[in-house]
Length: 185
Length: 316
Picture (cartoon, rainbow over the protein chains, first blue to last red):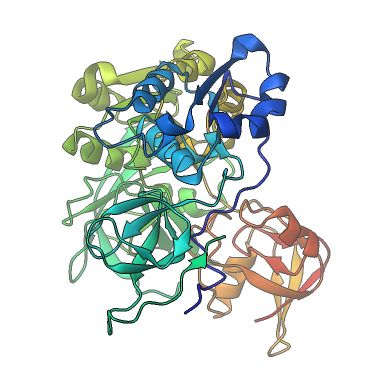
């Protein structure tokens, strides 16, 4: 089975540009993502910008619903202190960026205030449509669900709300059938 | 219109401001339906030599299906509609209206709603307020008016809303400082503006300078087609030619000739009446078509737009 090539919900990432009317420019990235933002960071006067850099470990699935992680605390505090006219620039793994986008929206920012760079790496967060469990850092399809153990086809269908790709059982009719895993792009 | 009209009877008329009359409309047969806050209806007025069709916001409680209320400001440069409502319509008269349509609904995801009304632009907010209060939403009403002309319902609003109601009577020299107002709002606030184009543009300009996200700014202009030069329109399918006089919109001319073109806002914003142009150059006056579509010149919004020259051929 192959993955459908054109799924509308799959995010596409255009060039990230300075939002000139913003009063504060808030850059949030992982260490690996910083280089993609550096030109923009350098273009903003120091007094109008704030930079939060997280290590890959801190960034991993870090903004949970209870908001107990270091990342959620620090980002949450920065977002709550930020003025209405804030531009938010994100760079890092895809799920990290969309978690932050959802956090920003939850405190009243609009989609057009949030820009994302091309994600660092191909890793996908996977949402199981059968048991709703999340499996992090998925690189191949099919993938065994961390919750129910079903073998999931990793679709290109993206849920912004879950910041995850949707997975459906690939061998529901015959669980003995184990297709060869393919690397995801 | 392509949807069934509702026959209503004028149950009461009240002068609610020097230039504004409120009309209470009850169904002739059957019943009205509840509507969503911000909805409007098109009122069809059987005037001579031709009828008028104007959009008016419903200002009654949205859950009340017994009666619809609209308020009409007498326009100085009336093309006939508002003058007809003020001078011809009497209690007991029957009118036809469309079912409610909504192009200006509240965004329920907003953390706070900032309502800015100019003059008779208070009307859509009259249906917002009960709904916002019902869900306990955070809101403020800023109402700009000239008490010698408009300012309907202001005493009632002030007493019902208390400190959430701000009145600015320009005839008393009281102005609204938009920079101060927009500069001091919490994140997640959505702005709604209904009023003259100058007020809408003023708020948009201040908001842009302050770095407001544009998706949090919603507006509804007083939608009325402006007059222009007379022209001819040819219908491509039949070869039939109609004359459009200076005070009649292209859409009205088509409707008067029995040509059904779907329409909703009749003010160049909703996109319903988009029609293909086969020949001739349109004079675009809408806010719906993109710059690219305008440049291509092969479609027109007949509710407000006209011909730039003497003749248009439409794909109808």
